[in-house]
Amino acid sequence: MIQLDILAVGDLQRDDDGGIVKADSTSVLIRASGRIIVVDPSTKYMQPAVKTSFKQIGVFPKDVDTVILTHTHNDHIENLKFYKNAKVYVHSGGDVDVPGAKVIDDDEFKICEGVRLVHTPGHTMDSMSVFVDADRKYVVAGDAIPLEDNFTRNIIPASNVDGALALESIKKIRDYADVVIPGHGFPFMTDR
Ligand SMILES: [Zn+2]
Image (cartoon, rainbow, N blue to C red; front, side):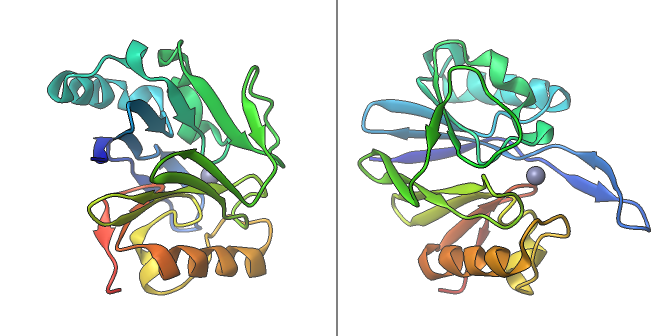
């Protein structure tokens, strides 16, 4: 059985001009096929929430064997140092070099049964999402879907490097997901 838990619900606040005031990513724990996987470690600000979640779930950060970075923006990766024993996965095309990380070059990469990485560029070229086949079909989308609103209204991330690719990526996610966990905010059901 594959289990998903939300370690911390991130937020994204913008000022009237659209500039980012505060950004902390949502952080997700996936337990599948004996693997303990964190998607997006999030920020220092979220550390208390993340620690509390680990205690409640009954898992220790040191037991996490895999960390997936949906992309390398700081608001998603700051707490990476929590996971000293984990193998880290990033997609190629990012601006930040993560020492020791495995760099995925393919459009899809299988982590384990039921969990695969799918390249979903547009917000950044290195953006990838985690497609999870559990009791429902989940997508941990990172900033391919920064906020629920991007999905509902089919609008590309305000910050993007390629709008056409970003739209394609939203479609990839829409075609698969029953539940989307956005880069920032709470999980939501799709109407699939
Ligand atoms: Zn980002």
